[in-house]
Amino acid sequence: MFISLEGIDGSGKSTQARLLAEALRATGRDVVLTREPGGAPGAEDIRRLLVEGAPERWSAETEILLFTAARRDHLERTIRPALAAGKIVVTDRFADSTRVYQGATRGDLRGLVDGIHDLAIGVEPDLTLILDMDPEAALSRGLARKSGEDRFEEFGLPFQNALRDGFRALAAQYPGRCHLVDAGRGQETVAADLLTTVTKALA
Image (tube, rainbow, N blue to C red):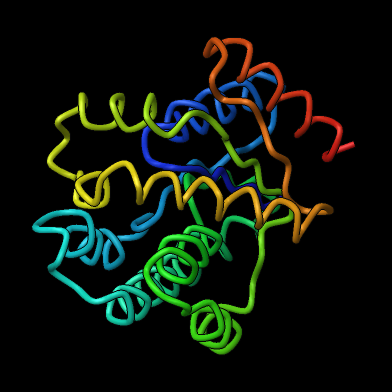
């Protein structure tokens, strides 16, 4: 099974992806935990171009191309081999992030995102868990990390509000694949909810 975690910056995706992978491994399942942009050597090189530097560093159109190039490398070198070997893949972000970040909030570019995705990627997760929480709280959490990878956080609160609206719209558009999860609760409560949803899907 191919599982993605999505949501705005600071919503806890990386932590919850790790906790989910650990919980699945504890049941004896073989799990590959990965992330985007990144997840393969070439894709990690592209990651640094995307998440570091000034907000105005790239246009939305250029970002779409860079994210897709990184995703293709990730797909070829990590995701497909793991799925072919019968493993569960848990990724912190996939194509839905590009649909929302570049396609819905930085201009009316959703058609461009979907067209390039269909041509270059052509794969969707089996299950997408969208972590939903208050953008102001999430932004404070994200900026507090001081990770050096805060280019998108620096677009500010209006951008994060637009992202949340975009992810909620995506959940409504793909109800069979996407599950909206309240990420404003305690970490353990959120993790338990995610594991329950995934366990049901695996069954």
